[in-house]
Length: 347
Picture (cartoon, rainbow, N blue to C red):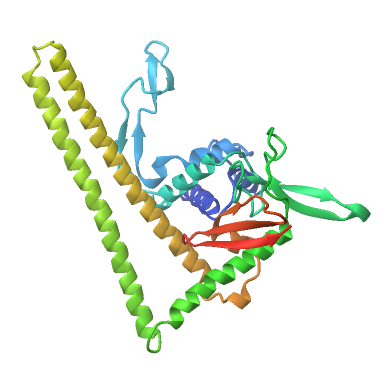
């Protein structure tokens, strides 16, 4: 149904723009949108299942489960007991393949960072401790005279034997640092434009065309690498089959070692295909993030930059916090377009 497809697209859009899975689940529950199974309460696991289901990009993984008891027709999750088959273009896609791959890349990166967070704050799952690699979490500090400060520090700060030396940072400091970092990014973009010759219009069109051509050339090179890897794997598989047919009657140790050696070559070639395909996916993901960044900041000038939840979430991928050096520390902003900017602060 189109109504269900619309919700799926919205979930992907919210996640790629910086919302956590827990935050998405709360939003959908508050809006009283039913889950795929008709329940009124969304769970984090439900959101994760939607974000990782390849069927939404028009592909299908067959035999995720299998029947292990014929009489009772009992099924269980396939842990490798039976062969699985991956079918591309098996049905119309709801999510663009590039967006699906970008979400998978973000899920892998978030999983690699220690700690969990389901806060609805735009800073959730964005700030990484330089000491332990864990996420920063939001806390409320009550000061004298009833003053309340919203601060962020590593979720594992007091959980380990060695206390993380990264600083406790006020939320307003993070907001101001973002404004400063974004102004630097925009200034770099303006410097590039100012360096162009003529009235800028022709060059803008020319440079845009050149960038697209370079992008297509780079992608063509990566796709060619994938194709070469597939050909090499196919040739290795043919050689393996030929050797097996020619030495079917032999059970010598030498034949066994030779067979295992050729089998390993096939496995290595297949692994090379996966690595090459990963390169293509990562390239497409970066290009999509660059496009999203351009769309969000198009027309924005440095003097106009003010912190907004949506602007931050849709332009910043990570903030890496360094340990204190004396009374100073560094916030390294990694923007969606791949540009890093370091901002120094005093405790």
